[in-house]
Amino acid sequence: MLAFARALMGGDLLSAETAATVTTGKVPIGGPMGGEYGYGFTDLRLNGVRVVGHNGGTPGYEAQLDVYPDTGYTVVVLTNQDRALMQAMGRVHEMLTGGRPGPPPSSGGDAPQG
Image (cartoon, rainbow, N blue to C red):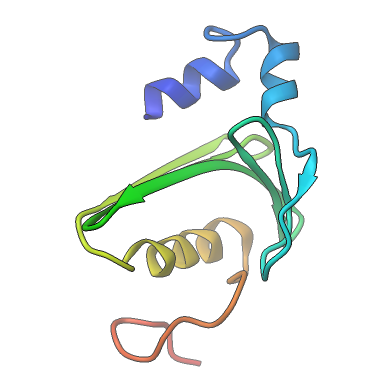
């Protein structure tokens, strides 16, 4: 997935213009994080930082690909446990954008303590 993200954002998979078209939001998502949905990618602003992503899963497995075009970071998270992805991505967003988006994590686990 990292190679895919690099090729997509680096102009090796699509032209820069076409990559911008597919990764730029067009339809509002709603929900706690807001953002928009493009052609297969979410386009969010978390604490002012742009995040382009795609996720998926099936019972027992979850995956997330997030590209931070303005900072140069790409994050791939793969899990083999249901409901593990949201907490992991919350921590990633906190580290890379300076704040935790969306609803607070569920109690238990290794959620940050205030």
